Length: 197
View: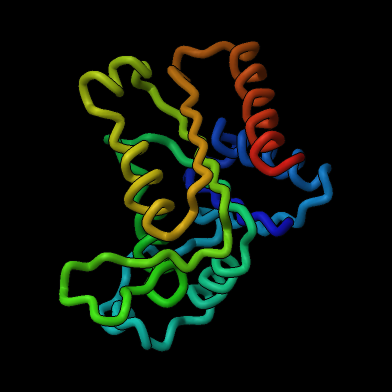
């Protein structure tokens, strides 16, 4: 299986990096091909230029390569922190530029403007790992867990990926080394179940 792994955290050595490494090792160890993009290390530009928004736009080579990787993926894993109930700007910009019409979704013939898309992604399974410094109960009851809605419904559901899994690890700032080791084992187990690793 060809699995796309996207990491969005600016600090090398972060717990997000440890999650991505654990996922990568688990998938590769099970014989999967892992296409890995550390967006911050790559310097991915999150700002979409006005001439790139059209479906038929000529894309810069780096963006076109990311689109090709997304389209070819049999599975997708995304790792990022929860910042203000959202992904970091670099990841939101990746979504804007790469999860695009003609690659991830299309509008059906005869659409009269209501914007009901059909998903185009080959991937049927997606896993999102988040880190947070807000307790899970507070995230759900006070904020309504906006990342769950964003990833499950607004992105993967819209793009045709029906088998969705998400795990948030927190509170990271107050965690111990032992707790983080346990979380890494949970991440390995989750991708193992999701992708048969």
